[in-house]
Image (cartoon, rainbow, N blue to C red; front, side, top):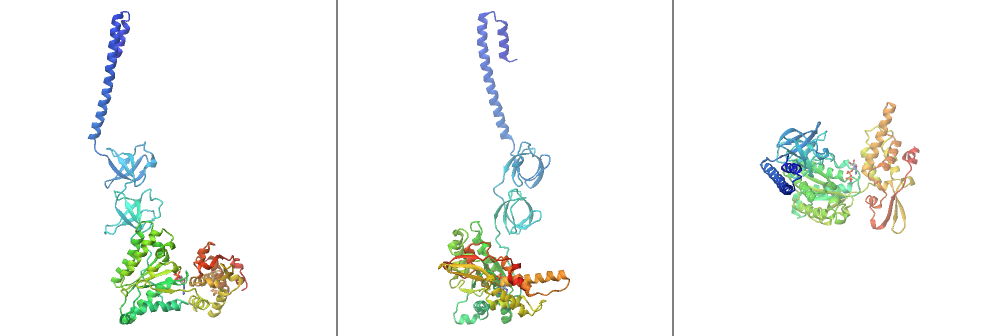
Length: 532
Ligand code: ADP
């Protein structure tokens, strides 16, 4: 019984005696006040006790959550050691993320989710394993390790060469930092490609030989005549007409020529990159890529290789400001960077830079100044004569042919280049209002011709399988393949947008107001396919 309750009892029993009752009331008030003060003091003492307790308690540890386990437990790594820990059941499950930090109490139970940490070592992906885990390493030669992905990266498409940040316990990849220093899309050696494996590009081949082979093979004459030696050249022309092929053939043939003339063998190193691959949304990353491409080539040249840097779709990184598809700030720094790198190359020191574009008009003129890439070599669409050469290259005599090769080639050539209505492919409307048509032949390319022959071979193979005997390639196979190729060829833009189509033609955009593909009948019912 509290003191106050005791006073109440006494006052109740002595109700009759008025003067005592007055005193009791006063006593009651006093006792009540004292009890209140006592309560307040107790609370204050308790609080102080708690504070003292907190200050004396050891710090709590943070761990990295590796996996959630059944029955309210989790696998947590703390300071390099794994623990199976109980998880406070009041913690929402969604707050526990793989790779996230968790707070552990003294009993090593998870009591709180602490989010992802903001720092940690950066590593590079060496391999993405089939189950999504990552083999990572770094350039310092530290041995590779296998890590898992945090829930932040669970669905990210990760590929080799990408830089990642690990958690503090080095077990989980937490964040993507950027792409690798080295572009992995490279081709270090090229297949044997004699000039004769390129059809209908005699002019371009000659220009390349003059600008690259000659100075390499007759350096003393160039020196004697004080004639500048180019460090590279630009190949421009429509897609699929052999720019890459010419680049690779340059590497192969230069190696052969040097070997023949000097007896020295410099194996080729052919670095093949597409402009858009270099572009990167991370600030400064594209510049780093370009610098690295050059340094890779220089390194290889120093080792005795003949290094070629081939940049396809160059207008995307070396274009004038308005040409780029991305913010001009990237381009405006890439072009000067590229020029500096070009200026740093010594001609004839085994590094050749080849840039290829189907929009040479968009390449920044600074790139094309003397001393940089001052040779511009045009790669044309094959005319009928060139197309014959290319058809002959792919339709070799050794193949099973239903008729003589010349007859087959002439038949498919006629169908390809005929100015017939069925061959109309693009309708052009000029500013003057005049209309014209481009026929299939006007948009022919080496790639299309190669694909036509390959497709015709497929038809003959299928027929041979069906009939159980060797069926040679016929005219009908070639013509059907031709129609299919023009319908499906990926070199033609799928849209009707004039600008996309203009890129494929030689027209001055100023003169053309509209350029639209002609709609075609189904190739299987096309006259040339059914008439045979
Ligand atoms: P580009 O770089 O101009 O877009 P490519 O050189 O990549 O074109 O050509 C694609 C393919 O088309 C080549 O691998 C080759 O099979 C074929 N091709 C293109 N042009 C020719 C050509 N002039 N002679 C032989 N094959 C060619």
